[in-house]
Length: 257
Image (cartoon, one colour):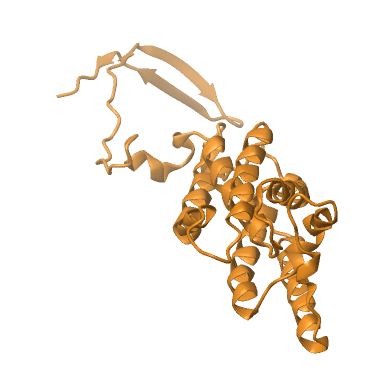
């Protein structure tokens, strides 16, 4: 059965990602314009006050380089999420922010953890594993594209660089995998083209008759004529008035060479 809720473009596919990007840049612009420093609203692990950072930290960035490197992945991944997984997109984003943030709060070093990279890792992980579990060629292609573009991000889930919250990245990776397993039954069913439908038969398209099952071109062969036997018969057909047609069928055999 085709699911029209998936693989269908709408305004939200672009509007929501643009909204997220504008939101983080607006907060950063306010910091620069008025000289504020919102870092203290980030996640500070193992403190009650630091829990508020679970909701605030995705919108806070340290500098232009930090926010710049998060902008394009955020836009690309959220666009793919709303296009391919619209039914569960908001749950992935909202729960992803909360769970990856809470994971950071539990295992993070005693410092302020800021930035939306935790959600980005959720989306990378979810998109990749969900496509693998779906076993549909379009979703697998999306998974491979994500790995091609952002596969190198896996290294930042390890403590290899000072000043980088590898705990938030690792939390996002684990959260995305968990969502792919949790929503495994909610596999998107892409809209099938005519040539993909079960009701379509090759004989319905004369062009496909020139190709075998493997897609190789074959020479068209005229159908074999099966020998038939005709029996002698005589009759009369009357058409109109005063017109009589006599016909005779004679018995004969047809043989093929």
